[in-house]
Amino acid sequence: MARPTRSRRTSKHRGNAAGMIESRGRTGRKPTASEKRSTASRSSQTSRRARHDKQPTWKGAAIRAVIAAAIVYALLTVVVKHTDALRNLLLLPVVVAVYMPLIYYTDRYMYRRAQRKRDAR
Image (cartoon, rainbow, N blue to C red; front, side, top):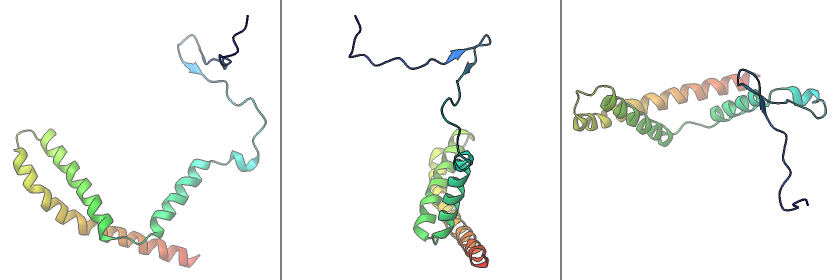
């Protein structure tokens, strides 16, 4: 007697002799020309454009500088083990103070460059 509460089993992915799993691929209708175009490359281009369409802010630069300082701290404490962790903590404000304007002015340069390219079109 069949069990109606269980869901039907979907097709399996079967391994070959080397143990590699091969999927069946597309079995439905043929994709149209617009579907064949890579949506991943389109989405990355639009997200890149959207990122350069927003004007850079000091707040965004500060957040990224704090993240960079945390990475520098982790690298110093893990990779360079002979340094003191307290000394590395004292270095963090210096890293933030150096990185924040560097990040802001780099973002501003990229923003203005993108705006010039957009206006030239």
